[in-house]
Amino acid sequence: MIPPSFEYLTPSKISDAIAMLQKHGEEAKILAGGHSLIPAMRLRLSEPGYLIDISGIQGLDYILEESGQLRIGAMTREASLEESQIVREKYPLLLDTAKMIADPSVRNVATVGGNLAHGDPANDHPATMLALGANVVVEGPNGSREIGIDDFFPDFFTTALEPEEILTEIRIPSPPSGSGGAYLKIERKVGDYAAAAVACQLNIDSGGSIQKIGIGLTNVGSTPIRASSAEQLLQGKNPDENMIAEAGRLSAADSEPMEDLRGSAEYKRALVNELTQRAIKLSLQRAEGSR
Amino acid sequence: MSKHTVTIDINGTTVTKEVDSRMLLVHFLREELQMTGTHIGCDTSSCGACTVLMDGRSVKSCTVYTVQANGRSVKTIEGMESGGALHPLQESFHEEHGLQCGFCTPGMIMRATEFLEKNPNPSEEEIRWGISGNLCRCTGYVNIVKAIQNAAEKMQKEVA
Image 1 (cartoon, chains in turn yellow, orange):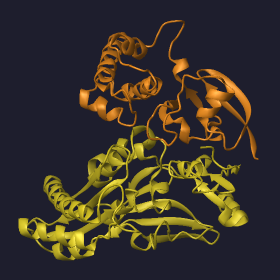
Image 2 (cartoon, one colour; image 1 turned 180 degrees about the vertical axis):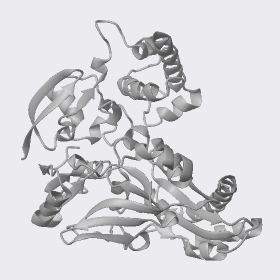
Image 3 (cartoon, each protein chain N blue to C red; image 1 turned 60 degrees about the horizontal axis):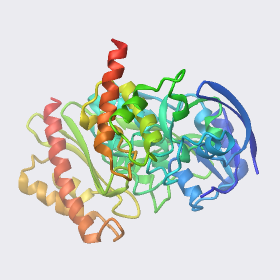
Image 4 (tube, rainbow over the protein chains, first blue to last red; image 1 turned 90 degrees about the horizontal axis):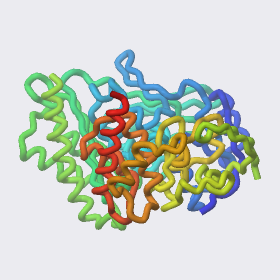
């Protein structure tokens, strides 16, 4: 499995990388961690003529919290999320997700930006970012713009990135006190894509009512899916067991899984139902604990 | 065909060579440098047989282009012994029979090297989680875990 030949380019500035994208157009691909792209090239599913390696560009690898936002540089390795003190303390959903992506050696290389920019509905961060209500910052020839995560995945393996744009940062609103989140994934083995996975992030007031909730679903549709019906049901409520069960059913109804080697569509819907309930309960528990 | 000159520190020796951009690090090690200790298993970053350390972190060398390692340091199983003395991990894999066919062993040891550096006194569960990206087709995990535990103890004593 030898990958096709390509020209290897090493910009040292984002503006250089953008100029390379402008010059080579759709023949060029950005190389970040490469842990989706290189296997795809080896399988000849992807045959870019130019790889633009952005690992040499300074200032794309950081996790910092300021002005009410967690900012994650696009080249931040998944392992850095696991090791980050701020993520460990305040972002249990991100921590859960980072631990479930691939395996430790892959996480040493794979990047958060790449996980989103690849546009794969089977990747784990898209659902997480839906639940967290993140924004994606991209830079192109005309400067930078922010894209809401709900608009970032318009179609199967498609993102809102223009061919000449590069994803540079992910911005996540800092959770207020009384927040909790969780990512629950069923995989056949470590390193496999999810048969189904559910991300939940919520915030409760002192009475236990849900002020804000986000639920994202992994690998049960042609794009990452927001479980809007379940979110709407729980908004403003102090849910009991029955309501959480109903949220699970609504979430399963919002999913659009296809049968594949990981199971039937029916099985995956059942997973979404159950995982949604568990993710909500664990998020509530964590929210209580964060008070 | 795009050619590039790379300079990589391999087990403490600086190596400069011209490579095709598409040459994977594992092929560079095995075919250009004849260092066949690093194995090729699944070829798709699932099995971990090709694990090496790049700048001290375990990576699957079947999924890294050699040009990406330019200017970095790479450590392979060949760099583990020093002056004829085995590394404590190598000793422990020997003593605890942490290998059957041996195919996964170099990757296991390289992965365990970074793991023990970060977590010098791990529990059994942490070890299992730590090597979850390395497969042993002989399923000899019990002794692999024991070997890593044993190495951790040896290395702790060395530090003390």
